[in-house]
Length: 371
Ligand SMILES: *[C@@H]1O[C@H](CO)[C@@H](O)[C@H](O)[C@H]1NC(C)=O
Ligand SMILES: *[C@@H]1O[C@H](CO)[C@@H](O)[C@H](O)[C@H]1NC(C)=O
Ligand SMILES: *[C@@H]1O[C@H](CO)[C@@H](O)[C@H](O)[C@H]1NC(C)=O
Ligand SMILES: *[C@@H]1O[C@H](CO)[C@@H](O)[C@H](O)[C@H]1NC(C)=O
Ligand SMILES: *[C@@H]1O[C@H](CO)[C@@H](O)[C@H](O)[C@H]1NC(C)=O
Ligand SMILES: *[C@@H]1O[C@H](CO)[C@@H](O)[C@H](O)[C@H]1NC(C)=O
Ligand SMILES: *[C@@H]1O[C@H](CO)[C@@H](O)[C@H](O)[C@H]1NC(C)=O
Ligand SMILES: *[C@@H]1O[C@H](CO)[C@@H](O)[C@H](O)[C@H]1NC(C)=O
Image (cartoon, rainbow, N blue to C red; front, side, top):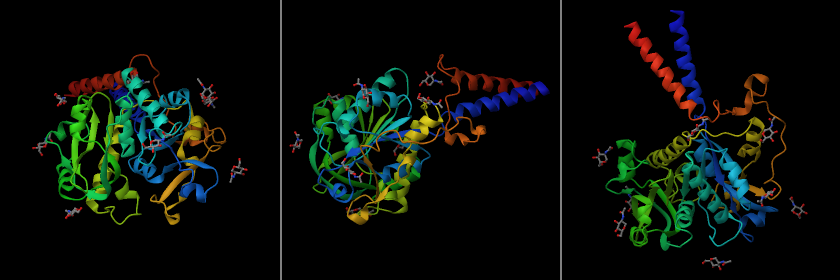
């Protein structure tokens, strides 16, 4: 009987370890350059980049924590970071892809590195929203432009799913209720100047790398791609803004119905669950704490005329490592670890996946011997 008890403890313990390593992912959100003569530079001194707070809330609302990813760095910065975080979100916004040292160049490093990591067997999901989706497609098409102009500003639309949409990873486990909401109600909010079409994807064989999952029609009736996933990598793109129904209130056209919120939450939950499959972490609690977005406070920018309720704004100085005290990794050492969860088992060929398997086996044997 004591033997049984010990095996049971081991089983439960190892299951806990296995899930602890993945349950609270940390996702990088790429910052974006502010317009030099725009609203932000008129109201704030020396702010060179921003993240709309709605993207942070969107991921936090699904159980993730957020790290801002700076623009204007060299590859080694992005490479170092990509081995510590569990996923990347490329947000929407407004910038040209030909602007150097900004969003587009940083996005290129991130997408390149995400492919390399996945090729090495390290799971690294990437989500692109609106401009982020456009950038991901553009960079994976070796910088050739496939976007067309689109009358896509300020419309709420239902999803027009492709026939086999639920054979995708993104929609494989979606409930019938959410599908019904998405199909019958104006749940997705669009605000885009450009879009991609299926015709264009077929002509240039982008259809070989991307699986198109839904379409929509702009104000002029032009059909465009609204949801896609990469066929090989865990990369996902939406032309609409799943974060806005929940977290942006600056336009009367943004839907805030229960159906729109449930739909937006579906995408957040999906992507954060993808990030939970990654097992990477920062070297220690201090390094993690210095990277997290909690070092910054968002500004209330919609009252100044911004289309974002709140924005995180950064000066070049703030993009350096924040000066905070050392935090013990161990929760019992009084620092509560600040939510730091190290990788329990290091390298050495997937021992972390063998452990739960092994204890599962033990459990089965236990149950069998009890009978
Ligand atoms: C902005 O930068 C200028 C030049 O470096 C500096 O003199 C000024 O103090 C900065 N303003 C703020 C609010 O940091
Ligand atoms: C990248 O930038 C960092 C500082 O941000 C610098 O220390 C490093 O030498 C640079 N690496 C390369 C390869 O340029
Ligand atoms: C970048 O592209 C935009 C739109 O095509 C164009 O107006 C702008 O002049 C370009 N900027 C540079 C630096 O090439
Ligand atoms: C996929 O969607 C079709 C059409 O709505 C439905 O008949 C089918 O049951 C769905 N399959 C799965 C696996 O959900
Ligand atoms: C969705 O919005 C369109 C206008 O863009 C409107 O004609 C339609 O009635 C709306 N549908 C629903 C279900 O609210
Ligand atoms: C992509 O489009 C081309 C041209 O229409 C077609 O020949 C090819 O079969 C398509 N590939 C896929 C995977 O649908
Ligand atoms: C935490 O990790 C960083 C980066 O590897 C390292 O420079 C630092 O010394 C570490 N701090 C502690 C307390 O271990
Ligand atoms: C992390 O996951 C990768 C697969 O993505 C696996 O090869 C590696 O062994 C895992 N590492 C740990 C420490 O669990």
